[in-house]
Structure formats: structure tokens, C-alpha cells
Length: 299
Image (cartoon, rainbow, N blue to C red; front, top):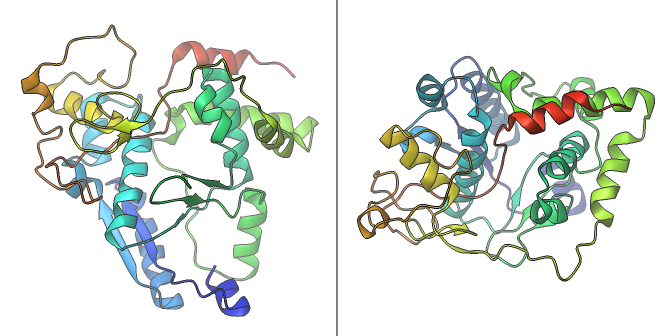
């Protein structure tokens, strides 16, 4: 981005944003690479941590819940943290490094989960244009292997190590299937992306309506955002809260005013409702039935 910005005079004000999830032996090493990027490219760097935002590190969360559903927590928290960081530095767009492999895996995962809302938008190269912080994925059609080859050929500083908790992730099953499929059908990744792009949802299909979380003011389709539910579950010992689908329960006025994670911090978007949680997306409630479907897929 920096090279293109200078070469074509785009006039972009680029800044680096990194999230420290608190994973020893993984994120601490990658932050060293990010720091080298800051020096090499001369760009401002902002680092936000889960510990500061939510009062928990991923290592703490894994110690609490075990090595299952880790990516559910991390995916939600990471997306929130990126939004918070972007608002903190005054960004008008958030550019991420999602590549073609990521996109194809996400399409497959959303199909298996029957998540029409996410399936409809997951292949868009720009999302959130109706809001205050659009997200762009300029590497959408770039294969992961080509990105790594480019970095190595040009001797760029980069970090390419799988998260130590990734082997238990729902996405891992989709990744393995996509790679196996690519061996017999080389266009599989691009075909999956194009399938997502061409998806049309019938008008009569009811789609979730976005509103704001009653605790932290972040966007959600429910009363409470996913991050607030997850944090409450961690703090109360009910670690299935926000992870598994349960029968609807009445939320008392006391619970609604409980401040979510209890950290007393602003949500990073100027709402300042005293909650460090802000929820949204991603990622993957590890559903055993869905994981079995992936394992049983034949091609």
C-alpha cells in the first residue's frame, strides 16, 4: 500500500494498526515484525490489547474454557478491537489482509452454517459503506501462496506462523477441505468466491436488522452484542453464554445496566457507555454437527 500510494500519488494517509490478543509464543513474536515494519516504512503504529479492552487475554480465556471455541471469542474480540483502534486513530477506512484463500473458506463456512446474512456480504471487497468505517480487502483475489512468495522474493519483513490455538478452529476443517478440493480442481478457490459474489437472496427471506447494543452501543442484531455476552459469560463462569444457542431468557434491568464486562472503559467509538465490550461478527462457533459435515464431504 505504501509503495502504490507513493507511485501513483493516491494521497492516502496510511497508519499501522495491530491487535495484541495476548497469546504468548505467537502474537508477541508477530508484534516484533510489525515494529520492524513501522521503522522500515516510517508509518505510525498503534497497538491495542485484549487485556486493556476486555480485561482478558486469549491465554487467560483458554485457561478458563479449554481449547474449544477459542476462535469464537478471538474472532469477535479481534473485529471489535480493530474497529476501536481505527476510530481511535481517526481512520476513515480499515484495510485488512484477507486473501483469496480466506474468502473461499469463509464462503464455505457460511454455506455450512446456513448464515445467509454473512454469505450475502462476505465476498464484497468493501463492506460497511453505509456506516462510519468501511472495510476494504484489496488482496481478495490474491492467493496466500503468491503473497508469501512475493514477500520472500522481495525480502519483506513478515510473520507467517499459525496461531497455537488454530488446530482446534472450525475454520481449520474448511481450510483443509478447500485445499484438498484445489488439488483436483485448481480453480476451486476462485469458483467459491464467484459463487458467493453471484448469490442472490430472495426478497421474502427475512434478514437481521442492525441496531445498537444496549450495553456498549456497538452494532448488533440482538439486544446485547456478541462481545458483551462473551465477556459476561467469562466473568460469571457461564462460558457457554454467547457461544451456544440456548433458550431465550429474560434479561433483568439490573443485568442490562451491569456494564457488560465491567471494565468501565469507553467503547472506542465515542459512545462512552462504560463498557469495554463491543460485539460483532465473526467468527466461528464450533459446532460439532457442522464439523462432521465438513469431514464427511466428498469430491
